[in-house]
Structures are given as structure tokens and as C-alpha cells.
Length: 254
Image 1: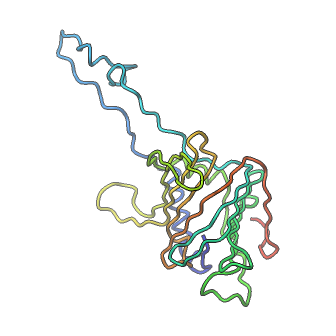
Image 2 (image 1 turned 30 degrees about the vertical axis):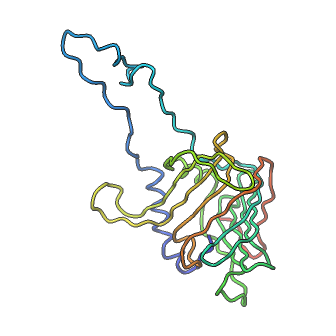
Image 3 (image 1 turned 120 degrees about the vertical axis):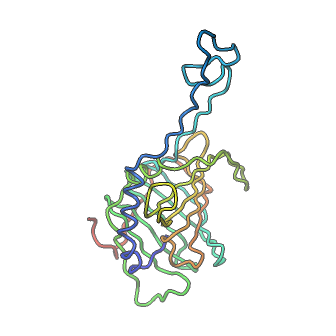
């Protein structure tokens, strides 16, 4: 999620436009197939009895898609932040309080160290350390722009359900896998110009979509990494108010 300041400004308009499209453009309606026509004067066969007019055979289980991921207003979690192509695996914390939230990866003693903060409807990112990035003079805190938990959750509502999975580790976790993306360009199918801006795979607890366990991200938001990807996995995640602190180096909220 670390970004270069100049490239962020270059793509900010595209990201904003794509985000708006993702929030307001209607998606395809995956409705049930229409019932088979019955010849005039003949009753429908018993094995084709429909349920509630949905055209499904009686007794057929109805698939109900689980609720999409939801970032709670208050939470605290710990885990690991990983960049495989750089051989980086460092501590990671993610906390939320009253809708604000903060991610911190690494620290002064690690090869990387950065924080991303949503604070009073403003998104910030500050990179203290990263391979190939000079530490002096200290980097500025980038105030990316207007952003909040509601915008994030609205975007998550557009996520596509991949399916149930089991994350294997010290403790296996049953999760629902979702994919959410931001795409620039045409929203119409077919040979129309479009380009991917960001893609994320989100894994949340099957019983509680507000319980986050793993996220894989790819796109422009990872410009410091040659492979443009990162992921973090949580070892703990509780719904207790965390601590969110805007670094002194950051300008005031918008």
C-alpha cells in the first residue's frame, strides 16, 4: 500500500472515477431462469412444481450468497505483512476506533516500516522505510484525499463471491473468499478499452463477515514493490476499540 507521491497524483483522478463507477454502476442481475412453458391445457408435471414462482423444482436447495465483507467501526488485530518477491515478512497491526482505522507494517528494526491511516474522513499513507528508498531526508506524509469507512464498505458491497475456503495454518479457519476490484474505462462488456487499477482478495470468517483473516492486494497502490503485490494475514482479530494515531508528520484532515 506504499505509494510514490508523484504517481499517486497521476492516477488519483482515474482511481476516483473508477471508484465512483464501482459504487453507482448497476451490475448484471443474476436472476433465476424462467420456468419452462407448459402446453396450453396441460398442468405442469409434478417434478417441475415451482417454489414461490422462482422456477426452481420443489425440494431443490436455494443457494444464498453470504454477506460481503464489512469493516467494523471498532476492532484490533495482529498478524504478518508479506511481500514474497522481496523476501519480506514483518509484524503487522490493524486497528479501528469509531470508524477511523490504522495499519502499521514493520518498524524501525525491520526492512520496511509504513502506516496507512483513515482519520476523520481523510486517507493518509506514510512510508518510513522501504528497500531502495532513501531514509534521508525523511519522506513526507501523503494526504491522499477524502476517504472513510463508509466508502470502503460501499466498495466491498460490489465484491464478487469466489467461494468457501479453509485457510491452513497453526489454526485452520473456515472463510469466505471475495474478490473486489477497481477498473478504469468502459463498464460495458465486449471489446471496449479498460484497465485494472487495483484488485483485492478478501478472506473473512464464514460466520461473521466483519471478522477479517487475510487480504491479498495487487495494483497501483503497491508501486514500491516490483511485483505490485502484497498480502497480510491476521493471527488475532477482536471487535474491541483499538488505537488510531495520526503521525505528527501528517497534515491536518481535509
